[in-house]
Image 1 (spheres, rainbow over the protein chains, first blue to last red):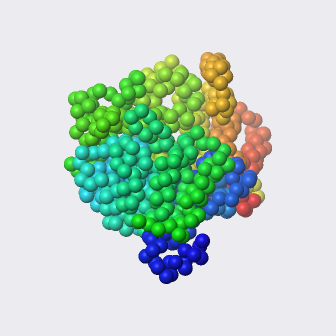
Image 2 (cartoon, one colour):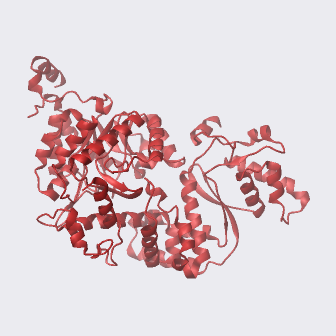
Image 3 (spheres, each protein chain N blue to C red):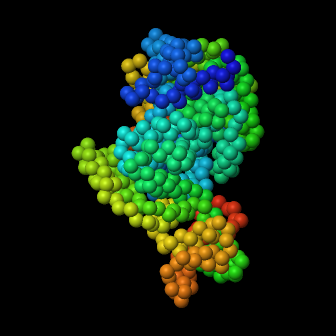
Length: 304
Length: 306
């Protein structure tokens, strides 16, 4: 399969499509990572004692931006055996205020320790005037917000000296002041910041149901060459909206979006998020490996 | 509308306390109807009003923060009881919203705030303050900074009247009026299996915790909250040991720290030297000592040296 794809690419590059056989790009540090698992404390013992084969682990940066103790000891042991990518939850690229200097310094220390090839955080806001909501609040999709957010992404990248990928969030509200739609806003930010995208296809699905848009239009509008990583996850349906709960296996509509994203972006580092009601490591791993159904034949995929 | 103006307005609504039935308040921050306030910023859709969409974030904010407080302060929860604890947390968070990028620091100002707002702990002021101090020390000891540890063999190199020795930042020293260490261990006992426990088991556990609080008698204790092999331990220490460790932490030279430690001691002068030697050996074995100006990240380094 791989050879056939490479042969076709040489003869008819346009027929093979958009970067589908080239997972490495400057937004993920020119790496070719496969399927990763979120490193969560209920699995520490299993991972360290059984040493399962996992291509890479994604860590929540904030859990390790501390002085010492068990979390850093565990991380040291994980780093001895596995590749780690950092994912943050509180940089708040979209908050109007300047980045918190202490946050940045601690993050840089961790980046040096993990040697993460890229670093991701959310395209959202969550703090104002130094007060933190600890939530991923949706952006108003305005050109002013895009400009300020892109500027902040650049500042953070310049300070940390590591490629940055911004993740689209799931949302439950939209603002009157928005001038463009969500994917246009995402594109505006990543073009101005010249950064990568962590494409969360579950978040796209959740938001599409909450805001009545076609999720495939979103996936098809994203600049595929900027996709550094993909997130998949489960969600929960309520009577009037869908909540991004990360406490279920990935549902079929999300797999379909994932399939489409892979068709467009090619073989991309993929991470299953499971953060609540966390089952055994084996179950999480088995669920994540289902992504192989779509990754296996990406070299022959043709983007439309 | 400027980005910062919108974010301030939304944050004020998101961080406003919920009603007793855990819904968003009908009154907006600063007065007026919340439905009108929400409609100024947020679009409705075919299923949810602007109010309802904003309410999702308002509820998420409080559920997340209250859950974090309950996780960090189970002992205070047991001391105050569930309802009072939750009301107290809401009042605390309304006055002291998080100013840190991490939820780990959410309770950093709780002791100070409770001292300024004693009505929340009126019947159990001393016990509650002891518990808050212990639970915050527990957090600090769990993931606080560890400098390069000095072992027994290193101590010989630095002995001398004016030489200084410091205490690991993660070691927390507490003088308490109640044996809250025992109470906290009792409260935490069985928490690991909470997810699998039946309601009956949970009810029995709750009653047992209430009994434990009720029967707790005052008793002055001195405690070092520390970690060993990455687990937190509560170690009872003598008053002289507490004074000595505090003096070292405050930068006193070793000889002066020993003098201060025994100022009010009932230990016979003849026994003091052996007592100090024993304490120093124990603390060195536990890895509590470090050089005052050392600034090296931790345990992995000293594990390699050992």
